[in-house]
Image 1 (spheres, rainbow, N blue to C red):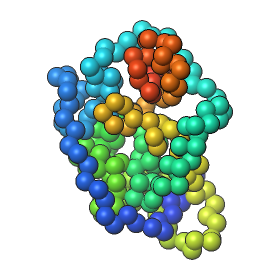
Image 2: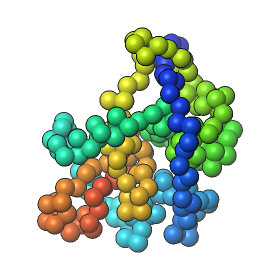
Image 3: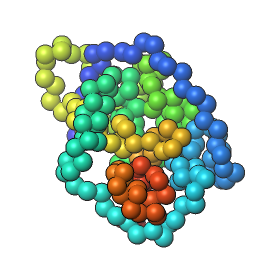
Amino acid sequence: MPAPQTLGMASVDRYPQEQPLITCPMECEVCVEPGDCEDCLDCLYWPNVVDDDAPYVAPARGRSLPIKSAEIEAARRRVVTSKRVGLISRRLRRIRGLSQRRLAADLGWSHASLGRMEMDASAISLSKVETLVQQAGYRIAFVAESTPVPGEITDDGWEAADLIARDRAGRRLSPLGPVTWNPPEDLRQDASLRGREWTWRRPGPD
């Protein structure tokens, strides 16, 4: 079994901002509770209709979009420890293909509890944070600022899908599929994008 990796816990965001309650606009079997919308494609694109038959377009490789690259780098510099826990949770769900509800059930938590942790873990107990990061193959450690830690996750690993991509309601897009930025010129030329700055694609079969 590989050795656990390390999550540095050098700082804590002590005063989290309250998050507005998200009310699901759809009547469906996916969204049972407020907050389920994150992994519901119908809610992400509401009131537009989801086109499941649209051809998959692979996102561009490399840093070909300098404007968004600068925005991503700025977002990475703002990441604090309490936010990094949520990013690790999203990364774990992306790797395992899990919704928030499924991961919460695997951990024996409520869906709302995991949702709060992904938004901001500063008000969550240390024991619950430790349980989550251990599931992702990490451990909590307190180290000196100048001490390099082999295997520690760096903020360079967080991409647009986790840091800046949002739907029209300001919600983060699901980590269970590729996210592509649509530059303004593409929105003007391609009506099928329906004015969406970000396009989320349902993951294809393995």
